Length: 426
Image 1 (cartoon, helix red, strand yellow):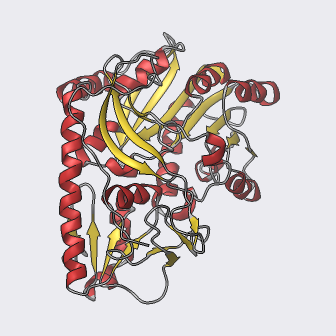
Image 2: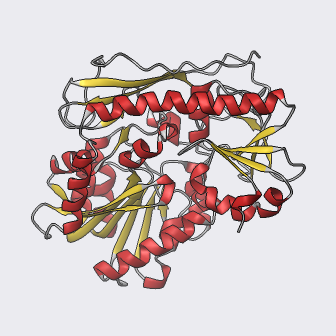
């Protein structure tokens, strides 16, 4: 298999995409960046699969000049992407701790008790719902991937193996009654049936119910040049303004909003039926900040695209230098975002010989597209790791302190390309 090449293209300003906006239904969507045709990031490949047989799909990002929603235009059917899934929430220490703290805040804010129902959309292996155990409330997960839904069920978390939409919400209502809290973390940008899902949330909420959504924040993506958060599973990329534009179409509004550090920066919005709760100062502050930072302006996203090109050139320069000096580089983790990065930049096994993982569902397979092999993370070590799961870098530095002290290095691609060594170990 020949070494891949970068197919990343920055279009000329003003190029309109042939698509209907996922939020407002308009046709005024400008192409921001074209990452080329890429395979589905989480469809890992058997090692004996011949090169060139994987299906690839356009990965293009656009900005709606009408409602400011940033989105991709091509949709891979949800049944293809999510019915079987290799991502498990409980793999790192960071996510369970994050969900524990979030659950404590939600329970305290809304007085959760034994009679109350919490429904988590895209509940994965039940990591978040497990954190509600101290409060005694009823919990229900809705998870489309059968393999991870079974993990949650085996762990004692009541889970429906379904896609959440308006029909599913009404079935939950009939069987369990209305929900005091509905949550969605790391899933709200996945939604092919976007408007049906929001209608379902509105229907499922109790009169005083609250929807708490956490989604990768577009403002953080722009600030960090985190283009690798773009992949086919992520159909929409939210600011408070664009999220509100969607929710308000269905009688819902954000009454509190904040940023949380998980996944390189996420928005956490607390949502209720319009007019039922006072709008907090946090909403007005975030609205003002987004205006000041130009997050509703196309110029911001045109600049973002040029920054991605600069990041590519810096990272490829470092990797080529390591290769020229005969130094080994492996990927530390094989997350979905990593597939976007290596395929967009044309990074294959010549520059990064393998990826190491502790998720058993990935070991023994290849990353899609560039076909970097994935192996267990035990065993010998390389001269350096390319940290594709860069959003957990602080955890990794602590975990790999001895490796770094012994002369190993971390090459971190985002938010800025840097090489981390022993000097970063506390």
